[in-house]
Image (cartoon, rainbow, N blue to C red; front, side, top):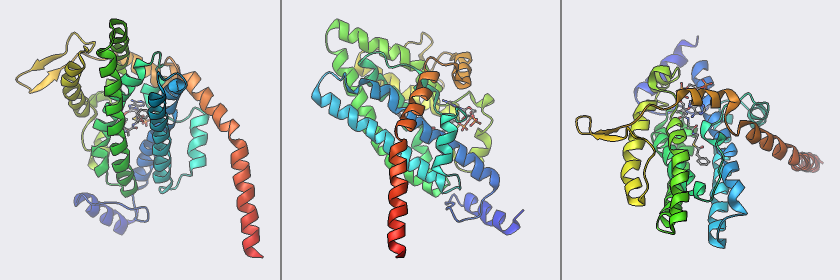
Length: 311
Ligand code: FAQ
């Protein structure tokens, strides 16, 4: 092992300072970060699908423009994250290939269908809300390129969350059928959104090491609790209920208690057997194949310009 490199690395972590791409780092740190950042990038890219599904059916021109911009933001987030991961030595092509081959993970949440317009509200409010809770602490992640990418991503996610909340508020204050549609969307997305934070701490093999390396700052359960505490008062403003009979304020803890999640369902989704896993990957593969001509053209152009420069 590189003794000097390790000592310098340990010092940087100890000082809660930043590791940059050219610094020496333990192989396990490089590998675990590549894992987390690439999964995160894939989530953004696959996460475009449930919402992309509603762009053509948005209820007004304004809603359509807003949704289109949001989905484009997600593409942008995927690109910053692939770039951050590339600084650790894995190329974007390799990461994309792993995704297409079904060998890479992406967030469980994007394997659930978006059935109604209200789902655009529930995704913005709950899914982007969970993403913010999880990602704001990642702005302080010890790896520089990741932390810096997170800053801009979190700003955009905050806007996305407001956008979702506003869709639900309008539906909730609309006709009884619209309110019911909003409630139904919240009913379906609540538990899957809570699962975005990952398995309970006792079943989270990566957490301890990631926290020692200052990648994660809080455990999965801590962040899940923070999220529940955040959304309960927001649900009240919306006039909607959260589908959990065990959800109750615990005066002693100063937090809301909530019911156990269905971790068997979570495992099924991670194993590739969620409601939309197959469809999401097929769509991603098809998009990749449809884009082959763009990559070919870019390569041909690069080769031609390189040739011109050398003459
Ligand atoms: N889904 O040991 P841990 C968004 C895996 S937000 C799938 O606890 P860790 C915005 C985990 O990878 C969503 N897999 O793992 C948006 C590990 O497997 P591995 C993306 C999950 O890393 C909104 C195993 O289980 N955000 O995209 C999940 O310490 C709307 C054991 O777990 C991020 O990725 C899950 N929910 O903690 C876009 C944030 N949970 O890798 C479009 C960055 C766990 O050993 C529309 N990531 N697993 O094979 C993180 O903060 C962490 O990686 C966690 C997991 C918290 C997700």
